[in-house]
Length: 140
Image (tube, rainbow, N blue to C red; front, side):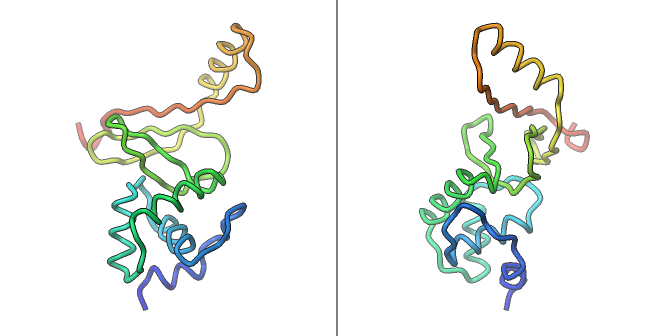
């Protein structure tokens, strides 16, 4: 039995999403990776681990997990969606364009700025997404 299958049994439950074997395998895999991964990269890892799962199924399950708030979706500069299980609560990402290293950041000034801009235009019930891309110290 592979390491992913062992870890899959200990994966946290996915709330608000109908549980399937494939969804459980994807959620479990996401607990073992630190960086954001594309659907193709996750699919390749699952296939290498012996999972019988199609790429379309991976995309569909990633969308369901994202809709349930179980994973974060990061859209890269090129428009590609990448996925990762992140900490609970609102946060932003600082992402290296070269190696993909990602740091979760709390940014009170961003929150205050977004609220102030929205309020100045009469908006309420505001949400936002901020991703910051650059080069990490290792990739300079």
